[in-house]
Length: 114
Image 1: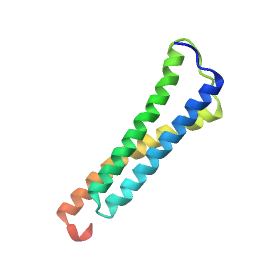
Image 2 (image 1 turned 180 degrees about the vertical axis):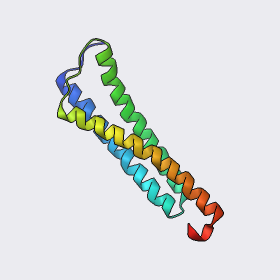
Image 3 (image 1 turned 30 degrees about the horizontal axis):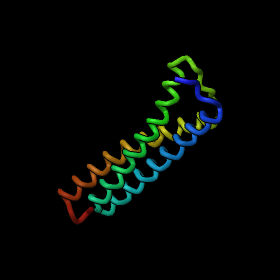
Image 4 (image 1 turned 90 degrees about the horizontal axis):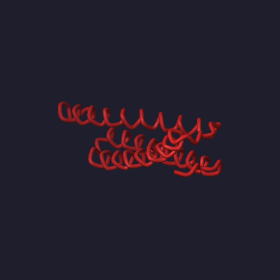
């Protein structure tokens, strides 16, 4: 594996930001759809959030493999920002799945309140 250049480090960090941001946005949209009782649509949007999160993790893995291969990754504010985006997107995705489940249960028990 060849070392990644500084420009490539930035490229990977911006990929992380973009994919994690898309995942976060989709997770929030899924929550709104679930709250409105549109469970099928919510699941579809949450599936896209999951796909985007997977792409973000793939970008992160590129950096981890580089570091593990002996080529240090330059830590800069862009990379820190990217990691923050990934962490928050992961938490929001997981919570969106739980909330979707709860909204579905509430609707099944008390449809008039959903």
